[in-house]
Image 1 (cartoon, helix red, strand yellow):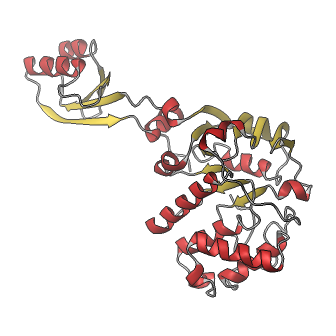
Image 2: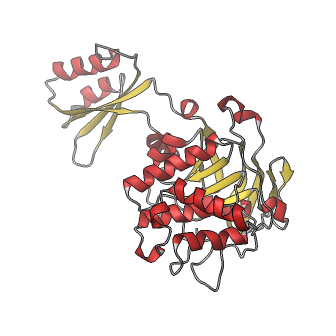
Length: 351
């Protein structure tokens, strides 16, 4: 999603959304308070483009100090949802509440609550890192000593202090992403939207950005985090929302979404006699490939430190041994967010 262009003719959010107030610092929030503090609430949001329903009755909330991962395939409606939250697109129906108040992007005091890190870089390549931060800080209403304090804080947080006087044209992709991220934090927003902030960057920069996201959470900032990297979502998010075709499919904590006590065992074998297939299907799922080979899928609950094969696996192995069927391979697939994502949204490519 592209919110602005990196052009001197189009200043960041020039800000049709630039706040002209100086926000207060954030108190550190106790982890147990996350579910009891108001943040962003989205109720029955809808958006249609002709016959295409981009967002269809979408509802979710993100509390102060919470990181909610919003994931879905390309075309699921995530970008349209973000555009409506930021006030850049008017919903056809539904309501948005921020910090307990109806969100009106026309009001500077409301805009000051929100920080946005767009997927496309929103920085000026001809300005140094510090100049970029001072420029955008000025648009956010920061002045004099307070502006310099925030610029230095962001440089330190993103690991760019040593590159403050260098221009982004000399930066690596990761450094540019970190600067892009830091700009959204200058005015100390209470809620931050991160739209795929780690696309195409090096592992060190990714690790630094994820640390920054967790730091925001520790200081009571609510975060809406979109990404196609499931390991990032699992690493930093308190809850995960999976959407597709504009609708919410599932939402909850990882423990609520994933039953980690279940394990999927896959046994690969060659061709099977029909009678053997019939017997196997009483014990497991049998999948036949085009080349005639078969995958026998066993789903069982497992206990920690288990020393013997699960009962269904022993039964299947005994049956295969009696039928003189050679094993081509056995693999274990533990429950993961990626597995659940593919089960809910399918494996078909979305370009």
